[in-house]
Image 1 (cartoon, rainbow, N blue to C red):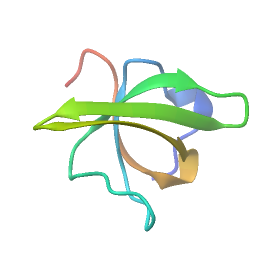
Image 2: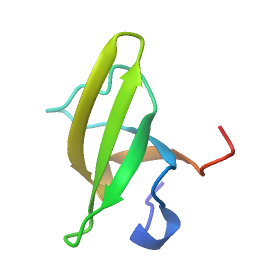
Image 3: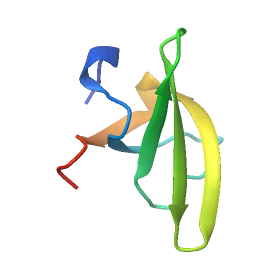
Length: 68
């Protein structure tokens, strides 16, 4: 599913797929929405702590804040 920038909010969680980045099979939390239609996400679970910027096209699943 393709998500639009307007559908995503800081605090939401997303699952992404990208051949160059490892998602650790975890949902990542959106920490910022950037001007160039990218989002910065972070994970801090199961011994993993990382922060990266991804493109909207990489998002496969989305959980709005408070629904997880």
